[in-house]
Length: 328
Image (cartoon, rainbow, N blue to C red; front, side, top):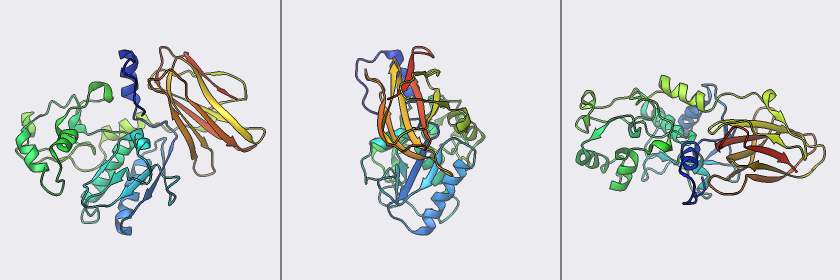
């Protein structure tokens, strides 16, 4: 998400932040391995398939092309395990990694747990123990002492970012704290002061919880292209979606040339254009106008007779009919 101007109205800012890291539903998130032995890659592939197997609107496709890759995965064991969150990945320049695994994923079942957790970040989920509804009070000295040691070897700032600091309420759509979530860390005894029930530790099962599954399906429901609204050149079509919702369109050009897709009106949106394929959609380009006094705009050369999908996620709108989309 691009930097937001400091003078953005608070209500508009709140909606932008709460929806900012979510992908446009229908996006094909292509990933590649920058390095790493094949057995560890297999674990990561299994984790991507487990998320996709829930029946969600995102696609995950492996590629060997750095130009195509949105997610770039490394296995540097000096860097720990981590991932950038959601669409923040798009701000990381290539060929830099957006995800890393800092220990051997093949040793035990914790390897798959780690891969599921980091892909959860890639999808847009934050740490569950940083949920504003968790009520966790940490023994901060004990937390710093524990996580500054291997295998994490984190700095104080990293421990604050990953554990201690609560996420601002506007930065997430949070349920009640789910201590069984795949996004919840395991914590041993002596780190949690409150709630009392967790003073002996937090031990999630390391699998996708019921709330994880419900949450990802709510954020990214399966969408059928048959429900997409068809676009035609120079024909303005309303974007009938509230803040946090999405409108989906399709376009089949009648000649091969450059076309421009542009939103108009008082909205903050993320727009993604993909080419529809037989087995997968091919991400072409995206744009984000959040917080700025402009509209999303994408210009691409398109081929006659092919079908293109245009997903518009509304980050903020004053009402459901404050904007439209047009093809030029």
